[in-house]
Length: 274
Image 1 (tube, rainbow, N blue to C red):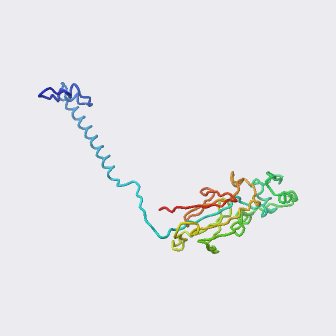
Image 2: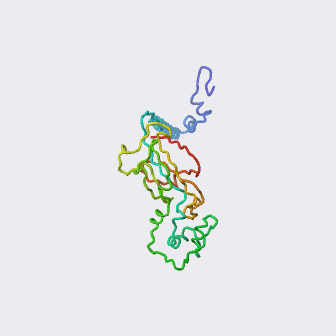
Image 3: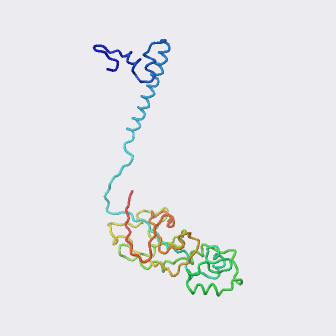
């Protein structure tokens, strides 16, 4: 039995002849005493390091009370997020002028260098007639052309795109919706607040259900769509882009929002987590 004989256990012989423990054979075996002492020191040092490492691992393990803690609190009200709504289309066809086409038409991929429509089948007959009727040699480029003013003017307007707005089944106030200029052009944000605003002034909801939230009727204005390369692959889509975000955060609907198709009645639920 592992180096033991009836009535007597020869530990040293077992260590020298049978044990697979590294270094133990050199300590228990026959040989120079000084050499055996060196092996004993090395063995004890390695054993000490092993015990120390085990201590550190156990200490580190028991020092973390928890990785994630979830506490459930019941409340009678929750903060309502900001909701930003954008049209996937950035520029309205009917708002484009000769000066707009001359200054940015080529850049936006609406016309080529000869002012011919690149995708004529995607435009209305009125717009095609308008492009063909202009003598482009007489239209001058504006070196101070303002792209911000152009985007705001030609983008979808609030009074046209937002047909109805109800908060808790009551008409929204004029201050509830604010204009936001994003990568999608004109967008309109509900419950967006200043960076230093007081949470008391934010919208709050006291119960679940659409009757206790925001209801919007939106007009995608698809006949106004102007295909351009300004939105990459999104330039050929139709519908609206919606983003939920913290009231004090700026909206990034193109990057972080989700799309809603035109002609759909959508119920969108939200969950508030802290």
